[in-house]
Length: 131
Image (tube, rainbow, N blue to C red):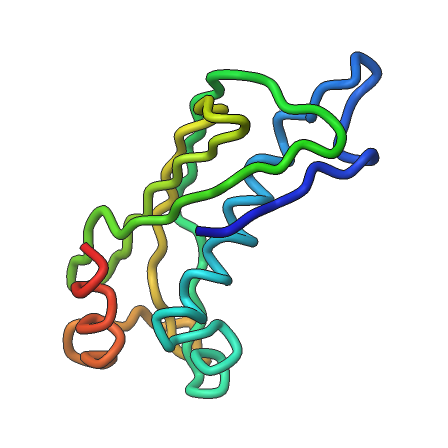
């Protein structure tokens, strides 16, 4: 579980968190999640692996405001040979504020796609333990 505290600059004129920030929080939570499963972005990049976002979606359920503590649960939804799909549930004060999903591919330094089941088997194994 990752916790984000809403900052003042993340709110709009109405005092509500601007919708674009939830996508940023997904990235914060994803970085934290991957570090916890032993495959941080830093380690992946040292190995020459990059992981661009292929798609992202977010469904907003309730608003958050300055100083709210948003708990973000990240789960592995699907691991395929070439893609990783993560799901996110964001809650605050016992209410779901957003449900989201991100899809990622994996490339080498030259920008060529990797088959993670073949090229990163330890990563896939760690992810499958989280399914």
